[in-house]
Image (cartoon, rainbow, N blue to C red):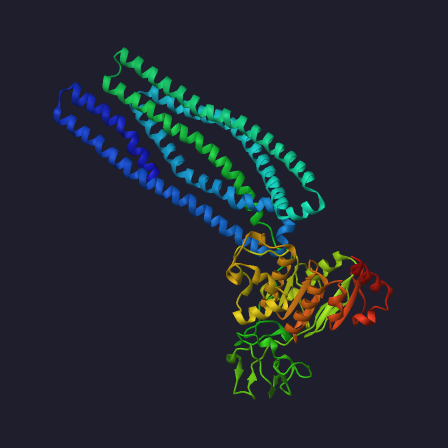
Length: 601
C-alpha cells in the first residue's frame, strides 16, 4: 500500500510541474503558479512519507520472513532428529539457514516495490494516453516488449543459479567435514588428499559462478539498456510534437519528466524479476527440506491420566526421579527404596510400606506420610528388548554387549533408542506405540558422534540437575582432571563442537552429560574407546556405582568394562548368540577372539 502511494505521488509530480508552467508561468497567473507549486510540494511530502513507511514495511517483511523461515528450519531439524544427517547434507542445512532465508526475505520485500512499479507504469500510461494516444500507445507496447526480452534471460539464469546453489551446498558440506575431522586427517596423513578434493570442488563452484555471472551481466545490461531506449523514444516523440505545435512547453516538460521517471519503475520491475528468481530457487530448496518426514510415525497419544501406555503408565503427580523406586524383590542399596508388598494388581499396584526412601522423588507424587507413603500409579523399570536380535536388557542392571562387528552396535543402539523403526519393546509395549517424546524421556542413547555445544561448561553438562549431582557425575566419568585444568573450572567456556578439548576429553565430558540426564535406560556406545586402560577401569567402576539400580546398557569390546558388567551379551551377525558373565563367556572362542582383538589393539 505504501509502495503504491509513494509511486502515485511521484508519478503526479511531472503533471503538476507541467501545469505550473503552462497555467502559471506562460499564462502569467500568479495564483495558478502558487496553487500548482503547492501541489508539487504536497506531492513531494506525501512521496517522502510513503517512501519511509514503504521501506520500513519492506524491512519488516524481509527480516520477518527470514527469521520465521529460520524458525521453521530449526523446528524441522529438531523434528527429524537422528534422521537429519542421513537425509540432508550438512552444507545444505547451513546454506538454507544462512543464504536461502536471506534471498527469500529479499524476494518478499521486493514485492512492495514491484507492485508500486506496476501501478506507476499504469498511471503514467493513462496520463500519456489522455494527453497523446501515440505516446501512451508507445509506453503500453514498449513495457511488455521490454519485460518479454528480459524474461528470455530469466529461465537460463534460474537453471544456472540452481546448479550453483547445489554445488555450493556440497562444497560447504565438505568444508564442514574437513574442519570437524581435521585432527583425524592430520593423524592419518589425509590432509593433502582432502585439500586436493576441496580444490577440485572449489573450481567446479567457481565455474558455475562464472556461468551465472555471464547471464547476470546480460541481465544487468538489459535492465539499463531497454528502459533507456523506451525513455529516449518517448522524449524524441514528445519533442517532435512540440516542434509541430501539437503540444505546449509545459506538456513537453511533463513528458520529459515522465520519460525520466519511467526509467526508475522499469528498472525496479526488471530487478524484481531477478530477485524473485533467486527467491524462487531458495524457496524450492527450503520447502524440499521442510517436506521431509521422520523415519517413523509418531505413536499413539497417552491415555487420560497417564504418561505412558499400559504397564508403562507413569505417575501423574511425579515431577522428580521417582523411577528410583523399584518393584518388590529387587535388591540394592538401602537408599533405593523397595516395596514390601502390593495393594491392587498390574501396573497400578501400590507398594505398602517402603523400606528406605526415594531421595530423588518429588513428595507430591506420594499419598500419606513416610515411611508408609503410597505412590500414585508410577513408572516402574521395565525390560528393554529387541526381538530381531534376541537381545533383552534386564531392568536395573548394568548390561554390556560385545559385538563382533562395530556396525551391529550402531544398528542395535538405533533400534533400542527408536531412531529407526523396529519391533523393540519397553516392557510389554512396542516402542513404535509410544510417542517419541516419551521414548526420548525414558531412553537415552549416547555415542561418540554427539556434539558439545558452545557456552559455559557447567550449563552444557548440568542440564536440569544441580551442582552436587554434577560433581558426582564428573567423578564417575573420571573427568575431574579436565575441569581442574581449565582456568575457570566449570565456568570456563566450551568452544564450538568442543574444539578446545582432545578426543578423550570430549568423550568423558559427553559421558558426564549423559549421566546427568539420568534416564530410566541409558545406552552408551563405546564410551571409553578414546581413553587409556587405567582411566577406562575407573570409568567402569564410577558409572556402575552411579547407575546402581537403574538400567544401563553399554556397547563395548573392552575387557575392562565387560568384566565390570552384571551381565554380558555377545552379538554376532546382529544376533545375540551367547550371554552370561565376562568370565563365563571367555570359554566361547568367538567371544574370546573379539576381546583378545581389543586387548591387542
